[in-house]
Amino acid sequence: MIGLFLVAPEDADQGVIQRIFYFHVPIALVSLVAFGVACVAGILYLRGGREHWDEVGVVSVGLGMLFSVLTVITGSIWAKASWGTWWVWDDPRLVTYLVVILLYAAYFVLRSSAEDNRRARYSAVYGIFAFAGVPLSFYSVRVAQSFVHPVVFTRGGADMPGSMLIWFVISLVAMFGVFATLLQLELLQRRADRAMRDLKTRLEALMAGA
Amino acid sequence: MNPAMARQLRALLTKDLRLELRTRETAVAMGLFALVGMVIFQFAIGTRTDDATPFAGGIIWATLALTAVLGVGRTWVAEREQRVLDALLAAPVPRLVLMSARAVALVLYLLAVQVVVVPLAMIFFVREGSFADLGLTVVVCLLADVAIALVGALLASMSVFSRARELLLPVLLLPSLIPVVIAAAGATHAVLGPAHALDEYWRYCVFLAVYAVVFGLVAFATFDHILDD
Image (cartoon, rainbow over all chains, first blue to last red; front, side, top):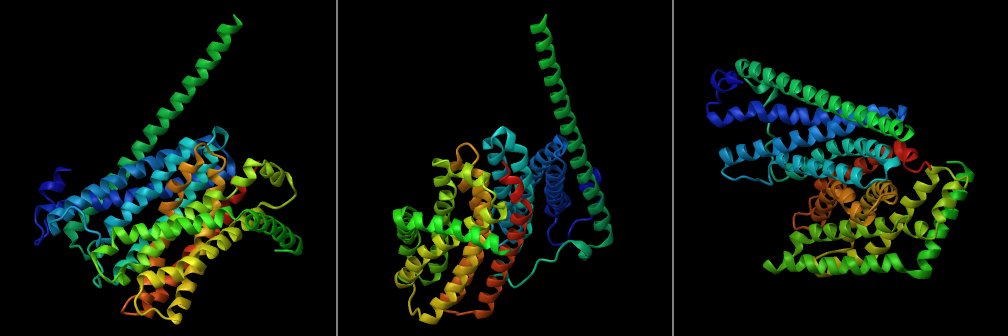
């Protein structure tokens, strides 16, 4: 973390604001991976019907949402620093993340209004459905942009000098670690909750019997 | 699709269309809604300039996307109110046929609205429109309708079994329709706009087709889990 701020090289043009890149891009990638995990969990739930996969799905979508919102916020800060405004509709990345956030926000609305016996099934279906929508949203915004902005942004990937790339990879791995840890923690908590509920009902039944 | 399924599909569609032709509830309401919507959008954007041509595609498709929500919202509602749905689900009709019948009916509703609304929009908003442009716009309408109907049939079937379905459906449907609106408005603008950029038009059309295929596959893979009791 300290390395990101002190050691990692700065971009010659953009100065200190470029450091947000080490957060912004890994967060964005992790949010997509989280939605992917939710999609896979949805498929596994529909196949096997195990409650575990439903929990993995809902926690992944939640974390994916958190990371996408952070992506939009860090992206917006970057936009302010490098283009002078908080929001640019011309920038395909910011706009697609907004669309993706709207797409997945509906997941929670669906989940809260679905009837109990259908909730997990519908969540799984919507998790798969929305993940199919992600690349389409990305592409649709880019088709629309390509006529306005002939220049394709190519920063990132192999365009970085080696010293930047190392720090980028470190931060990417760290973000994946954060995601995996949060996922585990949340699942653990849900399992504990469930165990507690079971215990309570059993205890109540016992008390009623006695 | 074997002959028996084709027969079932025809029976379901006949039921829907006969109901609609007798009551004329859905299509008339959708058409009026679309007209009002266009007028509102015109006051929101168009009054700033004396030529609305650059906004025509956007106005048409923003309105049609909102209108589609109305049409999709009617899906299954009549069946649910009269408890026909229970009978349909109990009948030995494959779920695939039920879903397809909904999607085809939705395409027909949307086309019925567009037949009236799109030419009117061209008169209202477009200067120097031609019949060739109208023809190209019809292609956009067909592609976008298939895309909207596939997504709509899937999401409507989920929302009809949920609480507060009339609130849930727009929230579910509209984010998924954003790519359709972008592409359809882009294609329409490419045709109707001054540049008349046909290569741009075809790229948007290809995108709409890809969208329809992708969500068609998703719907095909998942509909069994939605309508299974």
